[in-house]
Image (cartoon, rainbow, N blue to C red; front, side, top):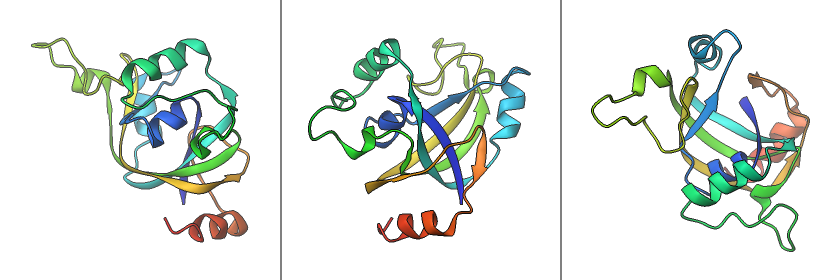
Length: 157
């Protein structure tokens, strides 16, 4: 199964906060990032070990209809875990910001979308009942550990 690693609070926003676009950049440009993530279908959402910071958290609070709370708070949402698989989403399409920019409105495809990035359009997020600890990777990667995949499947996605 394919997976993407996302820093918090972005992983929470994908699974709980209505974030329908994950932005990806590549030092060779948005077109190279688009090619790197060119895939359609279900992907596992993995939260990395790093926190993207207060500015990212403020943006999530501003754009999400749901209060994200804070990581590590008592009775914290399972979608706030770090270093684990947290759920799935369907990767519908991938395009660059230049491809979705509407000059008439001056807007991109989503309020979550960033300029000069590839946009991974996500839908139908599902949160696991329990995070499944695992080390992440860069890019779109394959999960091959049968024990991990079994733990995820038992959670009835």
